[in-house]
Image (tube, helix red, strand yellow):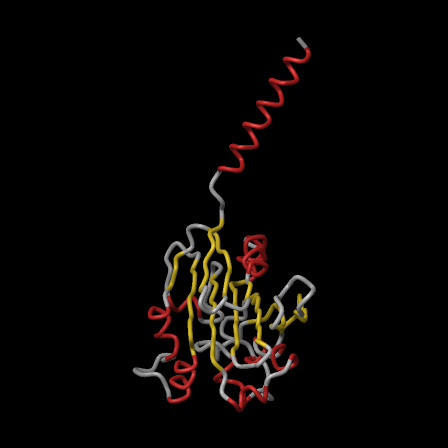
Amino acid sequence: MASRRVKLFALVAALAGLGAACSPSRYEFEANKKLGVYLKVPRGWTDVTQDQLFPLYAQGEKDPSPEAYQVLKQVMWERGWDSSSEPAVNHFVLGEANAPVVRVSVRALTEDQQKAMSTEALKNLALGSYTERLENFTELLRNPGTSELVSSDFIPLEDEVLKPGDGSVRDGFSGVRQLFEARNDLDQTLYVIGFIGILDDARSRLYTMTVHCNRRCYVANESAIQKVLDSFTVRKP
């Protein structure tokens, strides 16, 4: 009798485990296999295509500036995801999101940009909106539409160099991962930005992920945001 109970318990446990394994994931994988970019985002977040992101490059103008056109020519692939119940392209402008948004981009670097790239330069990409000493990188490194964010009052929360062998990036790539809190000069609210910047060894391509929303939103969605950042992977196609 005891043996039967043990077997019955084992069967019930196995079926329960099978049910859990077959339950739908809260996340779905996204990728550009030709460029070797992989990530996952929560189900239900609205997919925003490269064409839909185009208005960000105009920054309120009728047409993009010559500098923005230069960036557009370098963009090989770009996509976004908006978790808002009322998604809008302007949410991708830093300082505008009350719900998490994710933006990924792959850009081909010019010869001059390749020479200027370094780990320290990568560290300053997301902080480019805060300093005056990054003028040469402004159009390349700052996601279009972010120029109105903060000029001061930022607090680093994470600052990590990504190297092959530590599990964060694959061979042939290196990069940085940052998380910081900033005060928006427009309305004085606190804002949280997560950023990953990755270069291939030839420094020919720049891969970026930016995740952001206001601080209240970040606190409520920290687990999901961190999982999105953790999932960003770049490898050789």
